[in-house]
Image (tube, rainbow, N blue to C red):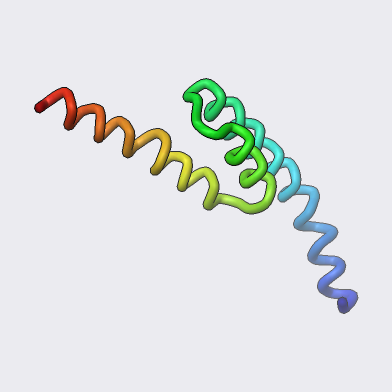
Length: 74
């Protein structure tokens, strides 16, 4: 690893780590309330950003509401 790459890591990590930790905690808490694989969402939230949040919103929040609304209409 070159000196420039190491310097970039020193600037990025202090901002990236709190974001990943906050995302993980929020996903875990919300998934626990909704009863949907809280540990999976929490661990995945620690690994990368922002895909876990986007997938969580899509698969746990938005799509179940649409399915529920369709069932109520029928």
